[in-house]
Amino acid sequence: MQLAARLAQIQPFHVMSILERAKRLEQDGHDVIHLEIGEPDFPTPAPIVAAAQSALSRGETFYTAAMGLPALREAIAGWYRDRYRHEVDPARICVTPGASGALLIALALLAEPGRSVLLPDPTYPCNRHLVSLLDAEPVSVPVDAASRYQLSAADIDAHWREDSVAAMIASPANPTGTLITPDALADLHRAVAARAGTLIVDEIYHGLTYGCDAPTALAQSDDIFVINSFSKYFQMTGWRLGWLVVPDAYIAATERLMQNLFLAAPTLSQHAALAAFAPETVAGLEVRRSEFARRRDALLATLTPLGFRFPAIPEGAFYLYADVSALTDDSFAFARDLLEQAHVAVAPGRDFSLHDAERYVRLAYTCDSERLAEAGRRIAGFVDRRN
Image 1 (cartoon, one colour):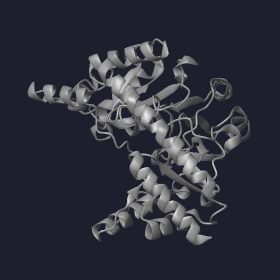
Image 2 (spheres, one colour):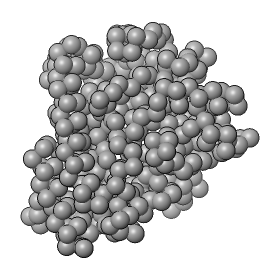
Image 3 (cartoon, rainbow, N blue to C red):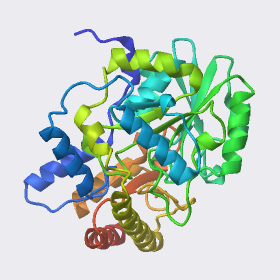
Image 4 (cartoon, rainbow, N blue to C red):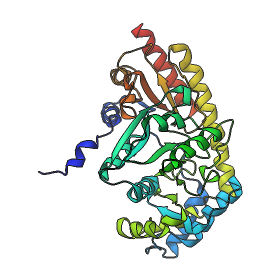
């Protein structure tokens, strides 16, 4: 079998070996608590499901326009107007098969052999891998709690190369749950733009912030690419629907890529998403956001006395990126042993980082409070037995 050389740069998720082992343990009758998967545990809101059922009954099963249903693009523009007080031309909005589809489109517009893209380390691993898929080079820039694990203007000064064309961040970020401040974002954008580069901002966890709100990067400039999704805040993971906002100059090229790569995003999902912005849907989502905040606070309170360190308290998403170096010098072995001995599954840092990965694990608070409390008891017992 012959594979393209680019496949050597695309690694599997290490957490999948944790998940596979967890499933085997469950098959053997063990009760495993899953804190490794980045997926909300809440079902898709009922108004969205009802909208899909209605669309299906009407026979809405044919391709849409490549850039998406006009009504949905208008609704997304309305979301920016109502939530962020920012006007976005619906013509700049491309509805994509998930945020991954949006990222692929954005990178396909910018990345190619001989070019490089700067990313923070740690970051969501698919970001690096999609850069490699396009035969460009991902440049991983180590970041830490001092910048809330975000790229900074100083990082651009230090790591930008002659072949660099873009920098990409996420706010809130996976795996750290941290946000970039508006001032830091403005400085970052200026540093990238001064080098004729492009800034890509992943906002798929927007809406899931606690004690603060996240302004959209579009408020900084119309030349920023912004990625979002219906998966996280709107809790439509399996519907595979996201969107990309592109600068005016890229609209025609974006449409060509959508036509050739995807034809269009899933039709039924697009009709369902028309109900995502309805007041009754958002009201229910805000209740769920409050529950995520309670879970975050409870898990922080449980884990901190056990030796888990949180140099930057997460302000969004549904993850804790924990420094476990006080407990182990190998976070993958720690995750493996935690699963085997306490039946709690967490993600090892090596999935997200090429730098200091052995220090970290990621915990997703995507199960209910009772299960999280039980996970805390099991982790406490596991740590106590190791001491």
